[in-house]
Amino acid sequence: MESINSKGELLPFAPTTDVFLPNGMLRTVKDGRDEPMQTYEVNSTAKPAELDWYDEDGTLRRAIWKVDGDTLIICNNTLPGEARPTEFASPIGSCWFVLTYKRIKKKD
Image (cartoon, rainbow, N blue to C red; front, side):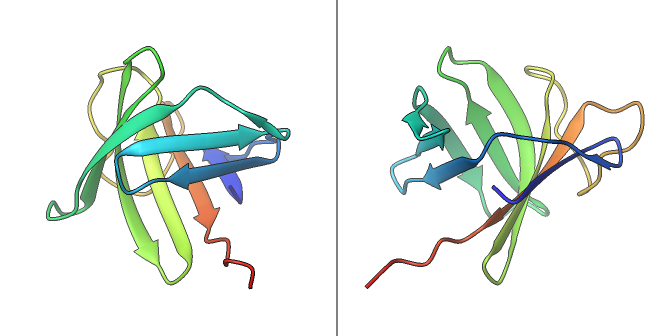
């Protein structure tokens, strides 16, 4: 993960690697340790594309996503089950986070 933006401010975060596996599983490594697996579902035909992200306990977080080159941008609502964000922003008073990821190139 490159950055987390909340309410217009960049937040500090522990070094994290998230791997979105093609089988709908999300593997997170934080501080060198595996976190509990999460799952996700995407609707890439929606505008903007939609992501439903389920925590390890099944809690739903609704999000939108886009890819720009090697950058994945996700805007999610941190309130479980609440409405999906409508734009890639984190306005003051919202519970939206904008997460920015960079693709990690495979080593030869």
